[in-house]
Length: 297
View 1 (cartoon, helix red, strand yellow):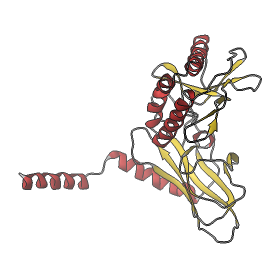
View 2 (tube, one colour):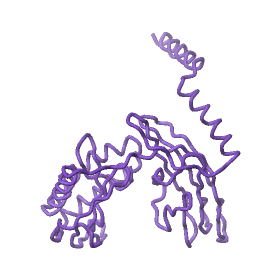
View 3 (tube, one colour):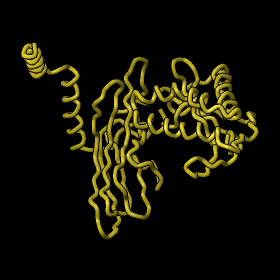
View 4 (cartoon, rainbow, N blue to C red):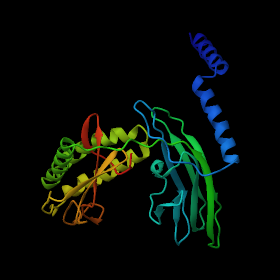
């Protein structure tokens, strides 16, 4: 029986080796086309708007390693992606900054004793293998020195259709924000986690790293609301603004104040922290407006 099982595995493996899937052929053709486009680089154009049924790719930059002390700036097509503050090894969503065709990543920082690596990748739903569009590498140095480099890469993003909010959408969004506040006011950490559960599952399809990071932050919030001395400030729902951004809607106060805030509390690890919801992102998931994570897609 064992010998038969091994034979079957070998036969299946041989069959796979002899057959190239249509998807693999398409990827190979696209890689050749992109290589030719990169060799004759020119800036891209605004991406087309995705049509119903289109597969929309997601694009990320991941930074590994530590730069030296000093300024650290990344720009995508001239737009500042971040300045100094980022989470190492957590991919940063960049699709909304990309052009269809030629794109540029400008890297500026001070070198340190650790190498710095970056990769730009494209992700598609339900595909485990991600396509690398560009890379950056900086060797470690004992003597800090400025590093300034531009990485050129080819991408083919699709812009999401603009969201149009009707009054029923706005009412549902206001209700979702109110429910979130009430869960915090009642110190119901379990409900807080439940309110974000659809967003965690939604993000995991394309962005498992972000889903894990978001879950860890939510766990911290759930611990915070049960801490001694935790209290929510009064919530004023008047003056809320709802701004569509990609697939999400950003809720903020028109006067610039946080949507809602809490008192400071001390966590079990000694950290003193509080909730200050400057903005609250929501997304329609499975037909319902849900609290979501601030990733932009």
